[in-house]
Image 1: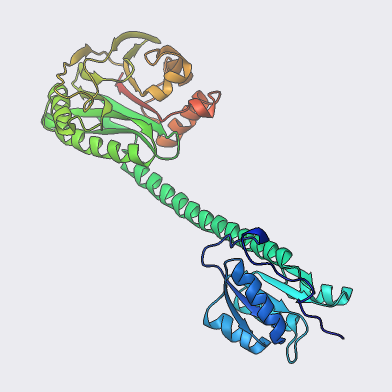
Image 2 (image 1 turned 90 degrees about the vertical axis):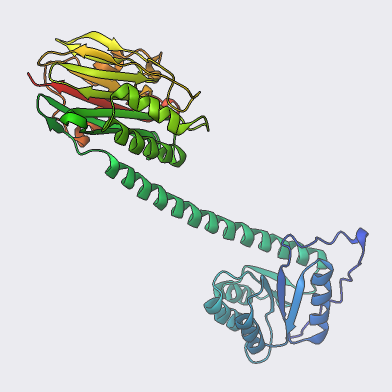
Length: 395
């Protein structure tokens, strides 16, 4: 077969040549051609286009060059003594499966075209090669390779982020109390549905000074990792304060601890006695006392959310309770989708909290189901973290 060189199409160097510059800074092209004239022309064309160029004269040298330092792209001659282009390409694929390779040949044989692409060629150009076409093809393959690598990197980053979010979500779920919780005269339960797997809503159930049951719900603005970190801190600090102080004093101390650095939280704190509940609401929807299927009393906010403006003072509301009474605390993720943040009737009904059947004995999975059903018709863009805390006086 007669070999052909690239000299039939001269290259004009300069601003008017229109030769495409390298789309990838520092991109290196390996030229593999046994003909020194062809090799020199290819080197010159690619260097003018802005590429770093290495060149070798045979297949064995090409494999050694790739093993030493993988180039960005290979321009590979088809007809060479020893190993021809397809044979070299098969071995190159074993070393660098994704390396872009453009094969050059003077042959129009369909069998050669088939053999080149069967070996893994990304492109196939006939000699004599137009320098402009060559540089455009090289640039096109490098852009595609760069996009593919960026996509893979983004996929790997996304997967790592997904795993981190799943781990953070699991940790946050572990920080929630095991429900239901039972004390003398009282039983409590509740659930959280994060707006985006991990959120800024948490609640806590424990025992404070004098053996009195305490409960709290924390709702940090927003959701995601940042909100979860703030919620965890607020939960930890408030729980420690409630174990030593009355609810109003605990929230005042929390407000001082948070300062005004932009980290604030809407909070409800409750201390339970045998015949009453001592309640402070700072920024949450009204806390409801449900009796006989009706809301007979509510506790609205008595001060700014802790950490919002600083210097806040809070007062507690003491609600007398009877056996069978139910106290319900909601985050605004359960009220705002249905209108005003303080409109609690609709979410109470959706959560089946007006019924006579006890609810505070339910576990976390049952509450997740109820929350999902209550919000099933709420568009995704309107959903936020949603939390319910239910405390019932033994009947």
